[in-house]
Amino acid sequence: MRGSAGRQAGAPAMAWLRARARLVPGELERLPPAARSAYAHDWAPVQVLGRHLAGLPPALWDALLAWESGYAVLVSGESSYHPGAFAFRGQPWKGIAFISLEDLAGRSAGLVLHVVGHLVDHHLGCGGAEQGTWLSEGGGMTPAWREAGLRLARLFDLGYGLDEVARSNARDYFAQSLVAYCCDRRRLTAADPQIAKWFRTTLWDPAFWPARAA
Picture 1 (tube, one colour):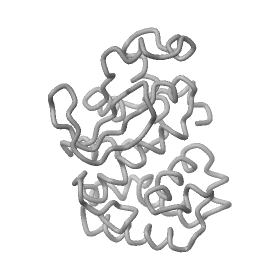
Picture 2 (cartoon, rainbow, N blue to C red):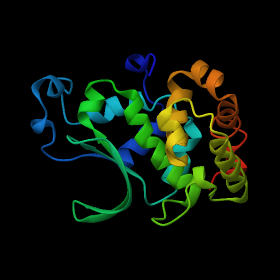
Picture 3 (cartoon, rainbow, N blue to C red):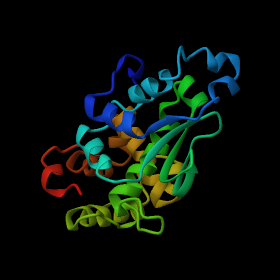
Picture 4 (cartoon, rainbow, N blue to C red):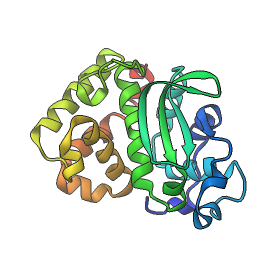
């Protein structure tokens, strides 16, 4: 993300991170020395994650906190999103964005945001239900979100995704477009102006949230 190193996550994002982000015990010690040196203490990875997510709209974090599912787990493995239940510290968590500590250390904002994008897509679409319909596939937790989800699904069908990943399926279309909207909005607007407008008038429109967020 442009300027992410100098950004600080706002209060809503940090509230979500404090409630939902967890570092797997012992994971820092498993990292290669170069990646390990990026973190001065166990809370440092969460602070770095907060900087990567600083460009997302504040109202989003309040909405995500309304659901019991939706977590970020910091690991030494690959970044990925797991929509179903997963036992963590004896608790059956659901909807987990596994965030690679090496991606964070390498300032790989795109990979981190892509995975968090799946979490957002899943929860705005069906509240994190394992077999529910994601927003990008026409889901939505309210009538207004369903309308937005149907528009989003139609945009994917037009085939204007900005790269091969975005054109591969509806979920990656949303996640990859979200990355571009945060990191390189000019490029997204040139390649796919309709999805740029969709983000501007939904997730990034403060007037959209009070009446429409679940």
